[in-house]
Image (cartoon, rainbow over all chains, first blue to last red; front, side, top):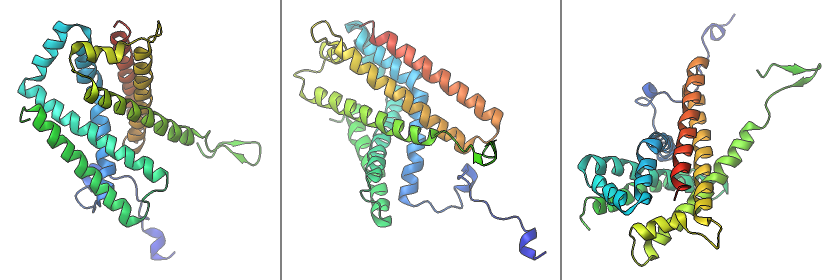
Length: 137
Length: 126
């Protein structure tokens, strides 16, 4: 038997958390990974934060006012800021995936650029609406 | 699983779950994107965004038909199905032990079904 037959062959599986330090993640990979994180985050928050807030907002004028008062607390603002980023990123990255499915911008350079654009636009929108949330405008 | 055979030759290699999930994920995404767009346009162009106008987006009727509630239900059911496909994809990639994956998938199903019931109860009592 040759030496190569006794060596375990390398396996390339999905990235685990411990691999993240040693792997080079280009923008498209970061966008894809953040798409998963933001999706999981939104699903976790759905019955805990999003649906209860929605229920308060549409039930009655009194609960609507209570919802607004609750949203004005610092802790809730931070939670909402994170969820806003999650929605913006998931939305923008989703649009990017749909355009890739339509074979738009599939070259390596274009897809890396659009990956970086998605991360930037999502963060930009978060800053703009975050400033609104914290009462700057 | 891929080794299961029917007869002498035919290997059972799936039932196009991948294709179905691919189509479901994109169709539900487009529905949610359109619903988001409608909500944003409404919020921007409605004369004053207050309780009454906000509620009206989800509760408006055309004649006796509860169109706001119907559209809201379509959007939320799209969200639920989309979330299930996404959660399952994540579990398939990262949770390799069968028992763990089954547990996580069961929790996700309960989580999503509970959210649908919770939201439906709110929406349809408007």
